[in-house]
Amino acid sequence: MTRPIRTTVALAGAVALLSACNSGGDGGGNDAGGEGAEFDLVSPGTLTACSDVPYPPFEVEDPEAPSGYSGFDIDMLQAVADNLGLDLAVQDTGFDALQSGTALAAGQCDIGASAITITPEREQNLDFTDPYYDSLQSLLVPADSDIESIDDLAGRTVGVQQGTTGQTYAEENAPEDAELLELPSDGELWPALQAGQIDAILQDLPVNQQHVRDDEAYEVVEEYQTDEQYGFAVAKDLNPELVDAVNAELAALREDGTYDEIYDTYFTTD
Image (tube, rainbow, N blue to C red; front, top):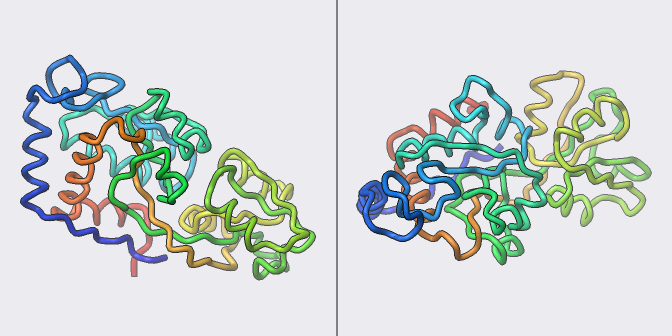
């Protein structure tokens, strides 16, 4: 796994923006005063995130967490919300509605936090924060399988998540006679593989690696260098102040070491 990028943002600019965001001034957004009044939030004082759960290790249900959810994405966003003086609420939302921008444009949530790869197509309908994680695609199979590479998927059924870059990669690179089974989320893909209903899963490397850690009867046999970067997503052109504030917070979390602490909680480092 590649180490996440270290996007450099001028600290002075970040501090200035953070000061403006926490001032509770007369900026646009909610009419209600107090924290977050300068943003156009779904609920005053609360940053509402849409996330496709489960997608370990990025988002999982966690009754002990303040929002009821945890994972790398959620913990990062919780730290951002805390520093902005906001509560964090999480809504479980289908990934296709997230990556298409539908859920955000409809005002269902303020921000999308769901391992969303930044792509030119998605940028037509979404505004993205600075990238916060680099990822690859990968192929997960049972350890006793004779599948060793994507070429071995000829005549096999491979599961992909609908609307994802994993689906796109499989469509472009799997053998023509491979059957691609599109399922809504990893919550359906993983049980399907365990039940023998599909022969492999092609999706983001960290998620497949998490399944291997959970069950040694499975292995990642191939990784694909797709140069993907995740970003938090906001409705297109509707809340630039929120994008700027989150970017400033991401820079601050890298600067003070919080980013590394959260990263090391979920990922193995060399």
